[in-house]
Amino acid sequence: MRSVPRSAEFRNGGISFWFRELGCPERRAALLDTVDYDVCIVGGGYTGLWTAYYLQRADPGLRIALLESEFCGFGASGRNGGWLSAEFAGSRERYAQLHSKGAAIALQRALMNSVDEVIDTAGDEGIDADIVKGGMRLVATNPAQRSRLHAEVGYRQEWGFWPEDLHLLEHTDASRLHVDGTIAAAHSPHAARVQPAKLAVGLANVVEGLGVHLFEGSAVTEIRPGDGNARPAAVTEHGVVRADHVIRATEGYPVHPRGQGQEWQPARSSMIVTEPLTDDMWRHIGWEGREVLGDAAHAFVYAQRTADGRIAIGGSDAPFRTGPARDDNGATEPQTIAELWRGLARLFPIAAEVPIVHAWSGAVGVARDRCPSVDLDRDTGLGWAGGYAGSGVTAANLAGRTLRDLVLGHGTELTRLPWVGHQARAWRREPWRRIGPQLVNGLYRTADRRESRRVTRTSRFAGLAARMAGREPHEPGPGGNAPGSPDRPGAIGEASGAAGPE
Ligand SMILES: Cc1cc2nc3c(=O)[nH]c(=O)nc-3n(C[C@H](O)[C@H](O)[C@H](O)COP(=O)(O)OP(=O)(O)OC[C@H]3O[C@@H](n4cnc5c(N)ncnc54)[C@H](O)[C@@H]3O)c2cc1C
Figure 1 (cartoon, helix red, strand yellow):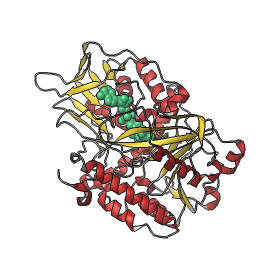
Figure 2 (cartoon, helix red, strand yellow):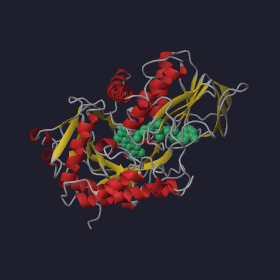
Figure 3 (cartoon, rainbow, N blue to C red):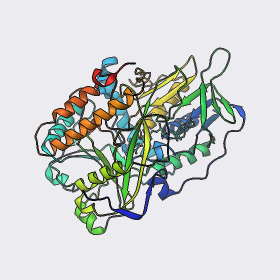
């Protein structure tokens, strides 16, 4: 087996290539006191920052504090694949069962609109995040993948993607982006490439400029629900913020007040980035449109062409890792790096010898039923949003606007979306929550190997994995393959096979 070509400047971890390119920002001052605000937001990623942004814009008189354990953008928001897309990981069927099919479609349409909302707001606020709206390209490179891609496009066209929103490409269109072995491709216009850390850091600066108080290096150790006697509060080692509302926006880093609110299991997603490709290589590959790119494998990859002509490619971590929020600045296993590089070499053989300069990982949050949610509990004053399961770049913007309406007590079309108030059951205890996803990942990888032998049907191993993950047989496909998604941990633990005792 060939070894991964590494640049002399190769770095593993160090938060992300995006921060290496941008430079890590100076930390803002920490919280050192007990203080009162109207709203306290815990977590300085996209969810927390967009919530602060829309609240402060809606009511400039609101006193808002944001507490961040490291610096804004340190989490997944500064590490992701830069797919600003209308993808979401949740089960459309599940939302439809609990609400209606129309409600699930409304959520999908709201996500599409949110892509433009992010682009327009970044433009209005002067945030330069290398954004190019080139759409999303999904490719199939073997017959089984092609069957799934066709089925996925048909399925999604029943759930809010109309033909102009997602369609199969003719060969001549598909050839504008030359992915080796492509036998079918689909395109959606609802996606843009972004430089994730530039978006997070730019947004933090804007939010601060609006008057929100950002405290960094301020890890919250406890979130206290409010009751008749005391306001809800966020506690750090050196201070406390009391507020009418405390919003938890820490997604893959659990700070769950006991028994309160939705619980998300942390899971990992990883990326590598190459040195810049030569002009000759780009002439061969094309990719002039800067589409975000994904494939239809079970252990899928997601990729972007960066502003300076590199390929950044990510995928689920192998083996899938869960557990407490230990963040070693994104250091990534050699096995994962090798697997991502094999994905790169498979899709772009011409780039296989281009050295890799950086590898990193980050944490995403997954609800037990895999459905993201937003909520505000009026009794305790606590709110939260997350569980995007690897598809949060756009969803966090929608969540931020929804939390604004919930905090301000406005009933709007956003607060009526079916993810508002959605509650999944608590995750099972270890070791089941760890072993189940590992089994599922192994099965999906076996399925990919078998399908690469040009079989025409989806492997039975994938069917077994889907059943263990509690997914509907028609749910999988690239649509379920959210860009930063851990390898479909899905509703592991819902299914009897992987479940084990509570
Ligand atoms: C490698 C990777 C690739 C991805 N690719 C994509 C993609 O291309 N497209 C897409 O849509 N999604 C992608 N995602 C997912 C997406 O990045 C996330 O869903 C999204 O950024 C979540 O934003 P957030 O603000 O909710 O969480 P985060 O960005 O994780 O922010 C949480 C913040 O809370 C802080 N924090 C944690 N604990 C505490 C505490 N105790 N006190 C105070 N602060 C705390 C953290 O430091 C962090 O800054 C990817 C994720 C990863 C890891």
